[in-house]
Image 1 (cartoon, rainbow, N blue to C red):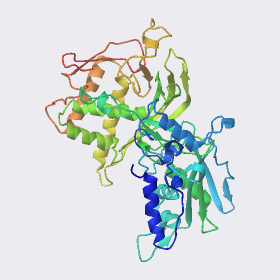
Image 2 (image 1 turned 180 degrees about the horizontal axis):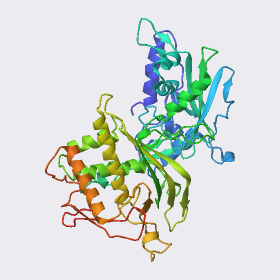
Image 3 (image 1 turned 180 degrees about the vertical axis):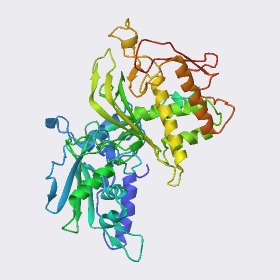
Image 4 (image 1 turned 90 degrees about the vertical axis):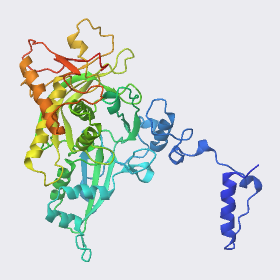
Length: 502
């Protein structure tokens, strides 16, 4: 029988020590010892099936639950809160450290680069934190040239490096930072829009903070530092987003607790009120309204619209990825959802009903320039097209799960309360321009022509997508109602049965 892995490792180490005159005396039983795999913490086990597989977020993945529990060491006496927490420190300047507390209205995601699962950097006692280098890079973005040199330093001349006066100590969460910490990524682009035979989408796990409070810490080599200016610059920097997935509202909207929200300087803002079927966490019960549903809707519609005028799928994908990002490039489209009223949930923890949400807020949208030298007319064209797409999404059904279906509670009186909720319903005073069939027809024609221009084609040749938006592939039926205000789900879209479109 061959030697165990531990025996081989022990023999190699013994040979190394023997060369310098040291000797290890272990009995044969001690040399034959093998560690129990079940006794090794999940964080240190191999990321393979049968050991510790963390990537998939299905409810049956017990490895993910065990890994999380071993990490946070929940204390039952504290209602499941993590065993190790930072207490709220003295804010402002204390013992040479200036501290600022910032709360975020949505999730915050930070990735340390670990290949097992996307998670933040973990410090002492397992408490996650944002490194000072990340905070410095964020801070520098909001500085003027003079402020950047003053606070962050100047490395433009390698022979004459000038250190900044600030020292960025990083940021850490306080309170119950482990609440809803296991997040989901559920890409469905191919399934929703792509090829007719695309497989079902998989859900992947990542770690993000749910509406956290962070403490940012700074020190300075200058006792006369203007800390009010430092605080103001930090808040301005946070409006650009911190961490990853900022194009989906992650890490945006950071502000001092109790302060009114800071309105983004975005060219497009839409007041929306909606209700629909809520997303749930891995437990299948806990609801959560996720602002990234707006980005998912816009991305899907752009691919549908461009796929209706061109069959060059590579070019279409390049356009979509340029706007909404990919793993190797950031998104140009930026959106931020600012709640006007707290989200309300209904039918939570009822076996015979799925939870639903009710929301009201402002959706801010912008498209960053491809490069600083991009001409103003091209930028304004991007903004105008984005405005058309958001209106198209609103008119054709709304946002979120089951957007293709009408909200049964309002439009189907005989639909019983005991049944699962279906559809969604959105309202907005900002989309009152379409009130007649002629106005709807003209809007769709103008949007179709805009897609021609973006793809630089004359004769539309639709792609082989499930829902390519082309007159020969889709029909829109509508009727004039008594509503004085534009409501989503007001029109019915029917796809060609002959082409087996959904």
